[in-house]
Image: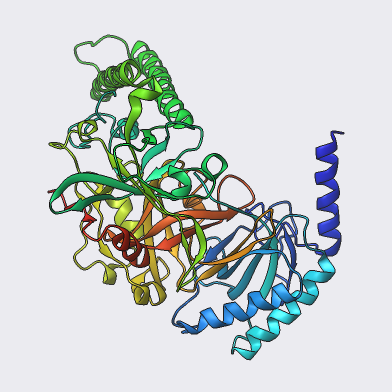
Amino acid sequence: MPVSLARDTSKVARLISNYPNAYHDFYPSRAPCVFKSGPGWLVNEGSYRILREARQISSTKYPLGSTWLSIGQSIYQRLDEMGIKWTSINPLAYANQGEAKPFCSFLLYITVTPDSLLYSDAVVAADAIQQILTDAGLSTAEVAFVESVLTYSVAGPKLLPFDPLRHPVPELRKPFTPALGLSIAPLGCPQFEGTASLYYRLSKEDKRIAILTCAHVARPTPVYGNTGMTYKTKSQRREGVVALGNASYNNAIEAMTKKITTLTTSIEIWNNVLARLGEFINGEDITITENRDETLQLIANTTRKIKHIKMLQEEVTKDRTPLEQRVIGFVLHSEIIKVSAEPHGFTQDWALVQLYDDKIDWSTFQGNKVYVGDKLSGAEFGEVMFPQLVDRAGYSYPPDGLLQAYGVVGDAEIRNPQHLDVDGDKCLLVVKNGLATGTTIGRANGLESFTRTYSNCGTIQTSIEIAVLPYDRAHGSFSACGDSGSIVLARDGRIVGLITGGMGITNETDITYLTPYWWLDEQIKLKFPGCFLYEAVE
């Protein structure tokens, strides 16, 4: 048996021997539970495990508002006193997949570094935290310690114009366009990839355009350290930024090749159908004629689609294969990353990339629009983002699947959302398009999460985050490594926050963390007082 497999088997046995539901409580998340307080959660007797879904805390049932911050601070201070190396604290509800009502309405989901917490210590710590929650009026709340990892993801032709109404195969074209969710990487280290989010004009008197991303995307700390920078004079060396780093460029080309293969196989199948149907014969059954005509039309449409994909593939490989040909701008400003920036304790992790004017066709530029049409049709968008008929006043599908970003979702609305989810509960429903996972939907949690980082030199930093949970298990994770820098919008296009990281045991995240945009916008305008979001494009 390989050493790694033996170690994993030993760990599983150890966790289960202490807490039998270690791999059941939060399944299908792969994050194992060291211990959970409160009544045991239902477990299937057979081979199929019950699927769980994390839900937002009900602001109606638990109207904690800003008092939650002081409660959370008491909790992490108590954990620190006990020597618990926690990495995040998340107030969540839990339901079985497909069930409207959570069976656990308040669970404190505390993550720790794998293999760092003994079962006996978890039991003692859970009792201490339970007392704090009880004193705060949350006597029925449960506490769980879960092993998980906090991550922070990360001269040539113009970017292609993007108009889903005019351009064939928009889902394959999108990576090579300036549509929001633009995949970027530093020219000097293109293996560190992330996402760019919002376009800004730097001032009314200035034609310069910049795009927002995370500082750890624009200047990865393994390469640049946490130094920050501002480009002020032409004598400074420019730190170039490319649209599509190594992996994302290769993935985009491979996606075209795979699509061509799939469509070619479909044509072969339809040709076999035609052979069985035979040539047209006068007086044949009308259904035979209709089936033949429909199959011929499928073949013609698919042949045309393959032609368009090949033309797109030829264009992007001819002009964009060399990395230098994909440079779109340079780092204008990158903040020193602060995990707990005053006065609110949010993560400060942002940068602006100034764009070269000749890299974008401004006559076709769509501005700050997020493409949701790759995964959400008009009917699907309405169904998942406006699931209640009483909550659909004024709803219309974004034209051509492009959701215009505008305005800000404020702190008060994040805490007390007014959308209604599929179960009729109040919730802030959100959407994003990023490098790693494309278009995804989720639920913002109204109560803040706390995250903790430990540096090699012993520095400890605590940050306050807005957590976004998956919409449900069927729609998958909200983000993965590489989505850092993506902008998150409410269903109507108002801006909620910037993705800075996530929590999970694999590349995909169980919980996504945002810096709220209402605060981030204030920080950007302190550095660039005249800047403003690029105007809406009709």
